[in-house]
Length: 54
Image (cartoon, rainbow, N blue to C red; front, side, top):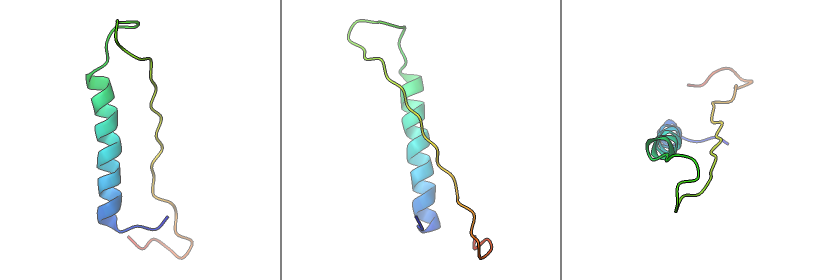
């Protein structure tokens, strides 16, 4: 996808926020009322065959 730099920055921030939210609220395994979850995210700038335009 091609997006404006401001959009990309917001996406990176949102992914980081989601990761932080999970890690900051992690509970001991099998704590009553919790769910076992996993989050995997890969977000990166793709190479531009015409040369970097950033």
